[in-house]
Image (cartoon, rainbow, N blue to C red; front, top):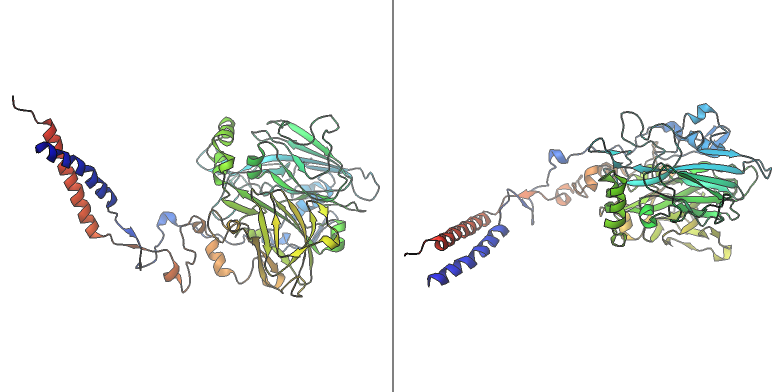
Length: 553
């Protein structure tokens, strides 16, 4: 009988301990029904709300001429540096030192010479590119270096191509923020049909890379009999350089990207648009379009038909992949973790970027700002892992080219959703003609990926690659959309994308739709927990004493 009783006690102990574990009380509980108040943020959760626009260089927005280069107006919050536009058009060797010093370009970043066809523009173009790491691990402390935010509070590890630069990788001695020329996405590159183009990759990075000219007419060997296709079998190792040579015969919208560990390196950011412009007299094209977006010096052929031109590059990031470069700075560890430990077939897309940013940062430099009755050329490239379904609210655009191949007018399709596969490009003709077809009239019209995940940032919406086609009367003097003040004050807050604030945290509905507060604990739960835990402990003591008691001799 005693043995049976002891067995029952042994069986009861884990049951009682399980009940006690399940009922373990907290100081407060998550609210379920009718919480008493919204949850307030703790002091360590509070982050400062960013200014939607820093308005750092308002003088860059105006139309101007530098080094005889006509630079169009840009109304965006963060316009391109017009001195860098002038250098991208004339070449760093054909501008004054005073202009060059207003840029971050190295003196040999872009060298133009030799008007071979005697039509008034240079035909030998020498481009030098580097690979730069953004938001990478710092060996000097627990912080990131060369920081570049894609959205409030979000700084994933990135690799980008950048024009060869001079000076520091950061803005100044007291900053960890990346030099403005070092940013995502890799710059759009433009050359003219028939130009002799030499693209040199000077690999200052710690891993090998290449440049593959995707869709661009190029021979398999360069003039030295070396690799000219940028494949994985011919990597450019750290400290080395390699020159790719082309003389493209076909104009169109193409790509360039790294072809070493292609899936990982492209998803880390190593890719951009490569545009071959039609050969025209006196056609000084803007070789670099830093950060993509509006082209402030369109080519001769584009200017004949369109009022403005915009580059739209879509990319995605897996945060597990991007964190690899933020947790180590030994190339052996990074290579092992990226090639062996990380499985690309199990990857996720957590961040969706348009021109290097996610919403709301896309409002700073990713908006299309237009007037009524404009004709706008859009060059769209998809370098994210998945397909996109680009949708423009209030407008229907026309596909004029697929993958750099112009379509006959009879085969051009007008629609409001455009399916774009990975690595595919579309040229779109967008009209702001208020006729009920091309445009429904002036407004702040959203454009975005209609695949639902594309408008999220690590699951938070609104985010992702959302942007706005804004008509000029609805844009303020800093290039930000009017009528969005409440939304901007909430979304330019790192807490929002850290999932620490509610979707609707201000206004009349704050109490109803804010984060649920905490409620007092269930005291019956505490009593039952105490009884179960006490009884389990008592039974355990009895069992121990019963099994260790000496038997009578």
